[in-house]
Length: 383
Image (cartoon, rainbow, N blue to C red; front, side, top):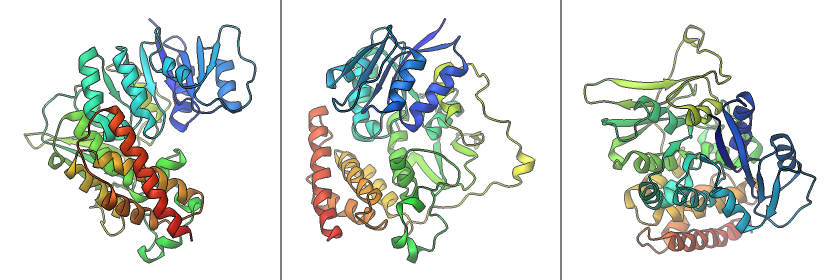
């Protein structure tokens, strides 16, 4: 039976790799709905090649290009919402970036759709809402981030299986070997040159600051229902061990492979079955050695800020997301220095009011207010 997929964020790094997985197994998967924020030639090329039933662009800007006669095309927020809960889809693949992933996941789960989740921010900001929506609808959350897919696999695809501790691995990003006193001089181009992964710009910068690893700690807390104390992080330069799970008897299970997002993408669609994913067999003798170490809090202040937000809870993680969106965008545009990302996050967190995580409307307000507050600090640094 062919699994029908609604793919949200089809033109991003993960979305493009979902398309490659689907093309590898056309007898198993079919994309019935495509959605992206803005158009561009890639979106229309994907729609032309895949011929989905429905194609949606959230933005009303841009040129429309010809699509297959079988594809209905719409623009605007309502079109995006339709793709999030597309009726004939068996699974909704949430590959949109940023806070927008929360709305997408909630709409999909509320419609009773299983969600393959490749968005960190929705669980960081609103994990309580996402888990409640999944429980109410009897829908599944299928982790796609490489780290959380690794944990899920080590737990035998059972997110409620018992364990002692989750151990997430971190590459350290593109600037991990730059002397700390020179980090302020690093450009966006240098921060985007990740040594082991090819990802979108925002997440690659978040890797360099390790803000993304702080997000992943909070993801783990939400996905596996554990306190902060049961989630650890180790540096791992080779990006071969994607995460580990420690058990009561002292055993530790690790999921290992060469870095490739196509493996966790595909396993979310085929589990518990494993089939060829385009990833070469791991040659441990050729690798020779794997290295692990503790994170350096002086090098990665954003990681420390994220852990502080995890301890605080409430809407602090949502505030962090809004500030992070604004600060990384400013760095990529050359408005601020790399080291000023952490300064903007800290300043925003110090100024922002605190409250309970609340409902979706409250989180939207919190995230927007954090972005606005961060922008005020960005304007000062840019002067």
